[in-house]
Image 1 (cartoon, rainbow, N blue to C red):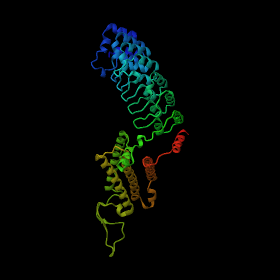
Image 2: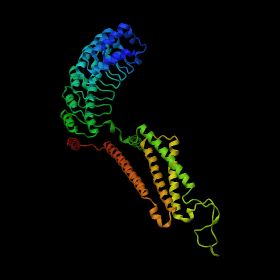
Image 3: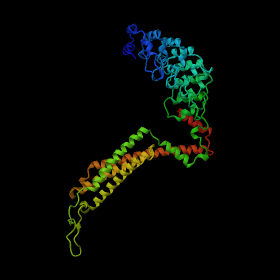
Image 4: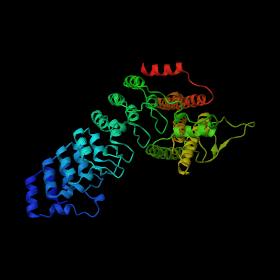
Length: 475
């Protein structure tokens, strides 16, 4: 796009536009001669509409009507932008140039009617529905056109809580109420799952609404409400649904497994999917674990070969033993062995044990991470984190006992810093918290498995239990 033309569109400067066209009458015409409109950049018409310069946009269309037929790099047509902005006069102008633009779609498969209802532009929606031509399917009007997700404009009304637009669409075509999207959800399903109280009431007031329609998961709107976390608006929505005759599905897909299908494999597959986490989170955790494990392995390896208290440099009598006698021959130390092994045998052994545990745990984590095992779930990541907790606790204790070895006997109790106890305590608390969370997660899954298994072994819920469930939801 010509830079001066772009600046004029940004400012809505009609005088500058006229001056540019006087100097170059073909300036706008070149904006329409783009070989591939699917990858075309924005035109001056797009810029003007986005900035809200309706008068400037109308003058552009008067001088070059073909600008209305060009989409930008996102597949957005000027009619989409005018509909979103609620510019009714501009919408009328574009429709008069080419009515078929009403069913033009952006990269998400949305027509201008979809965009209009998202922003609650009822006046624009009226103009679009009046002017839109009948598509190849003669029974299909603009109000029934669907996005790439199978959503009609009325579905988007429910998603974006545009009650007035929904009422207008229902007045135009009451059958829209029971049309389903790509997941089998009606408009009522979407309004209920989003807890849009006023939208739910408006839909229930409409004639011929199917209150107990089931989606692809065999959920009715009431099932959907009961499956979602509780909210302050639940009571009002529940009462409205029950008053309209809403019922629970007897066997929604969440409990579709028969008794013969409740095998160990099915339970393990279900529990495994429960532990899945976001890939970005997993990658970040694995990178962090690799870094920390490598650092701990290097520290413990170096400390093991160079223990606290140093090593003997030459062969000599062991100064920590009593004087040799006929019954007790002299004891010599070997060069390269640890002095602490003779001076503080117990503490030195404890130091070595914890140092080796830390080294082993960190090396295990490194081996697992570089071995190529599939680690795309949080269970395996938690196991690796547990090994790192062990490594951190062990290296902390190794530091404590190493400090004792190089401290004079009278100061041994004061040699272990308070920070060591704090670190060990924090690790213990973290391990306990994560263990409790992990245990509750397993108990929750077991409770679901048991209840679902019971539904298929002859245990049926009676009317009294159903009534209790509904009362609990309402109260």
